[in-house]
Length: 278
Length: 311
Image 1: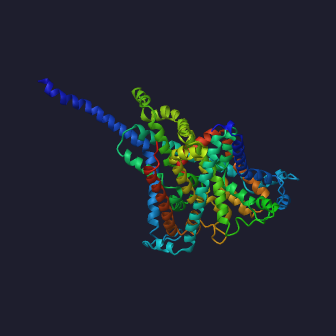
Image 2: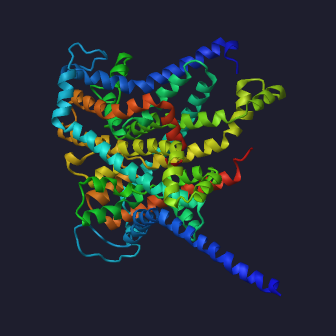
Image 3: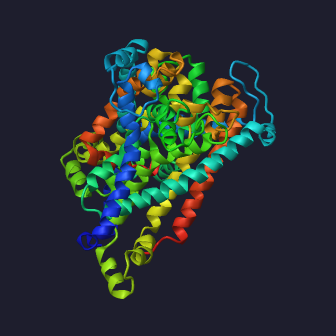
């Protein structure tokens, strides 16, 4: 257990970790390198990471010209925001009611929520798609966000959080004549930030990266979130202009990676705390 | 005399406000939970029931006719080669990805936990794939594994091996996808194991040392492994469920090819239901998929109940 006592074992440990780290970093290094290389150097299949002729401007301008890259990022931001805001607005009051109020049907509701945890989007996608298609609202932000407007997972998470919260705080507010809605807004929400932050990170990571649902309800590039946009870009480019393709992957990967590097602890906490959703 | 009348009178007076308070609490409860209840019913309960109902019909989007066909769809599934290949591939993929990503995640966690230096750095690096856009990283891996211009085969050529067409050959495609799946999942499992490791009381290691476990290897089997039981079970379950849900890499890189060698469950459902619009038939596949997930979760609960409580 003491690192000083075993220099050899320690060296071995560091060596294994470093080799592993190289494997994990390799795709990112090559992604950046290839995004800067001109076509002929990519096809020469040399292993050099630094390009002989820099093609940064060329590749990135292609990525931005051939697909509305900013529009894609914007779509991602809009859809993730809609989903997150609705999820939290719906889940917070419900979780508070289940944790602190007594009302008939509360037990049945909790049972329904636990059951809901077992049902992934892949199972409900077909009927929801049929309904959205029938309503003629495919290719809209609404269609992209609709199935995720309820997160049973958020309710579950907040419920556990609120159960641990002292009742005195709430009773004091009640004695002051605050309404239940007022309690939610002025007492619960400010105190629930840690849980809300963790859930927000989980939700944004999940929906920013999701391909399955967008690929079902969106066929127009203008409405596509980043992952689907990337798929359209590949199709349009016949997938072999790797320089431009890698430039595009850099653009769509960087926002979340940057956020992660800035707030690592929170990200890791958020994603593992909520790991149970899978 | 009065004292006989009084109790009933008092009870009536106090129970009225109490009942009113209960009523208003119930009312507040339903009002606050209302939106969630409505959305839960509309977006989860109803669609789940609908998918089971649709699986008993021949419904196709674009055709108005809908006919009850009983279990015909399920019978058709039994003889559907694509579906059976898809099931088999999903099973193979899961059987490769789960043990590897769990073992490597545990290995990384143990090494990082034991190492003082660079702990945060390694953790960050191993966690990167979890927060990276999987579609984008799949594209990068496709380039890395490209048979002629890809760096992986270029490296292999340096040592005189001519690498295969990793993602283009029907023998290697599933394993290559599984490799990407492992790369993506290790960091997540590692972080869960790290959390599990910090929860093990230090005194147990000291006690084990005093007792009979002299080497780190002995201490691992005597203390770490049993204490990690619940974490391991949890990580295995999540890994299995995520592996069964593999979709992004297949959709991005191979589209089920070549020659259905990377056809997996969700991809088959996607094709059948959302491309060919055979909603009824795809619903039957979805029910099978959902049943598989349910069985996995029940197995987890069972195992949790029975074996893994050591504390």
